[in-house]
Length: 281
Image 1: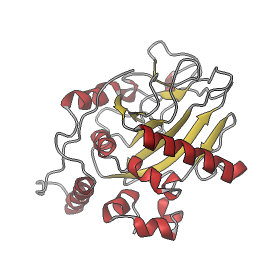
Image 2: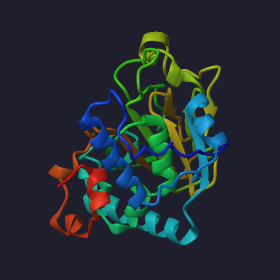
Image 3: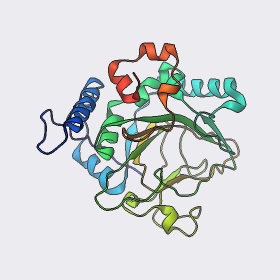
Image 4: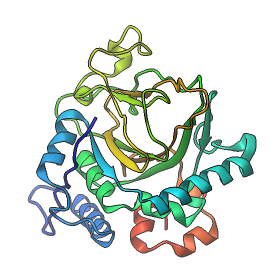
């Protein structure tokens, strides 16, 4: 699976005829946040924007350099060891996988992920209205485990003309290979009904699915209405660590509400734009 990513259209500064004032104000707030975090017009080419629109996913390439990747792996393992059987409890625990949750509050090393300009450009392209961070979690499918049913991260299918509500990204801390498993996606399925309404066996291979085989440091973004799921780690000893940085339209609740979990220290270092992106005061 390969591709590029394209930028969002920046929200206009002027008010639009027939649009409620509060909608214009929300759009302007979102624009100021994106601008402060480095999202600029033309940051991503049109070909990548089209790939997101048509296929429902795009690969940004290797955004994690060796130094950052090493730090993220180290911090991942330290958190797993420190949290023990509580690891991942803030979001989701899963048999056969090591999980971490609420990573926003667990080290500045993660700040460059949820605020990355290329990521935010892609998220805005999909959601196309003010959004916020829903969660930042970690997952490592263990050998002999990790297979998931094809699913969408929204509760129902999308009717023609409806907006998209959620968008996710995968930050690979290890190579994703046929041996240790990878994420599978069904291109174009973000335009279809919910998989639970269509598939007889959502755990079975799909004839149209593609697999994300890519080196560590790679980042992929996918419209979370797209059918997707992890596959089995068929190796005997290989890790498949990844971070999932997930966003939702601002009118919906977040998976992990930052306002309920952020420590005083984390709040103190956040910029106004970062606070807006987390929807915290």
